[in-house]
Length: 62
Image 1 (cartoon, helix red, strand yellow):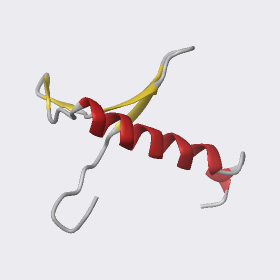
Image 2: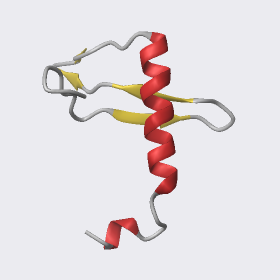
Image 3: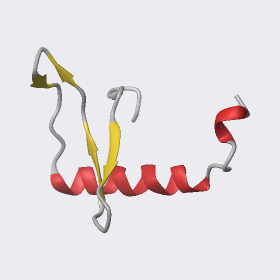
């Protein structure tokens, strides 16, 4: 995110007909991070927009 905070292994989730949201991984059965609603909405929207810009065969261009 910046030189002071980096988040790893976040997942973008979406249910049919619902908005997307970002979740942090679990460790030892507990959440590793909680994201406030506005912050979650902002990073989810950015992540979804970036994902939608990927070409259909992006997995083969690495």
